[in-house]
Amino acid sequence: MRIKICGITNLEDALDAINAGADALGFVFYEKSPRYIEVKKAKEIVDKLPPFIQTVGLFVNESSKHINDICHLTNMQLAQIIDDEDNTEFDNLNIKYIEVIRANCKEDLEDLDENYYLVDAFVEGFGGAGKRVALEWFKDVDCSKLILAGGLTASNLKELKGYNFYGIDVSSGVEASKGKKDKEKMKEFVKAANEI
Ligand SMILES: O=C(O)c1ccccc1N[C@@H]1O[C@H](COP(=O)(O)O)[C@@H](O)[C@H]1O
Image 1: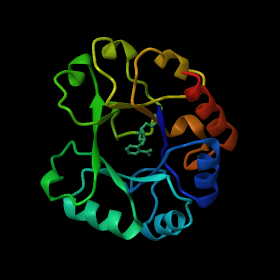
Image 2: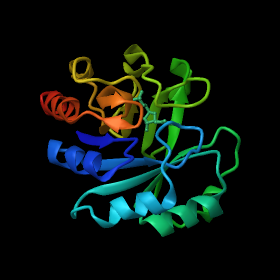
Image 3: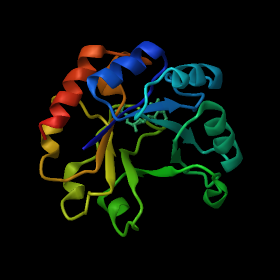
Image 4: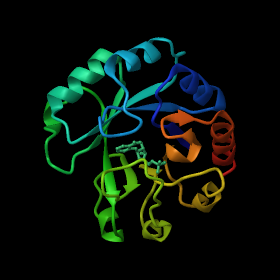
């Protein structure tokens, strides 16, 4: 199962996440987030990363031009897109992307197409809030192309056994404080994920 650690704001956390075993690092380009990172800082971190780690830029209700520009400037390899306001013209993106489903009920997970999706819990004011998606909503869903996010921690990951999620994404569950990761929590998280 692939593991993304989101809300990276500094190089130390990025390297600790990689050493813990993360496959992907998320950078939040959403100014209202406590984990917001400026373009220059994100680029400085990305430039120092070792190979074989995917960099993911998180965008909320942005235009395709904005997403293309920021990803190009910072060497993001994937855009994670929340587009509640239909601002993103997906056909005009020149970067690989994954859309976020902010699930509020089981029906939000029905009739998904063949694309990969990241499923997070619906919260006012967007994500990184530690709120969980009800696992029973996934009972009859093929989870092999879904990345689960929302309130995951090392201690609740065992509940995901048997669902066959493609990946998991965590932010607040491995933080020491908002915007600062906890090295031990990241290690415990990856260890627990590998035991699923
Ligand atoms: O992390 C943020 O601040 C954030 C802001 C706006 C949209 C999404 C955000 N984070 C994403 O939220 C989910 C779940 O986070 P958590 O583990 O519940 O804290 C994850 O996909 C983050 O990438």
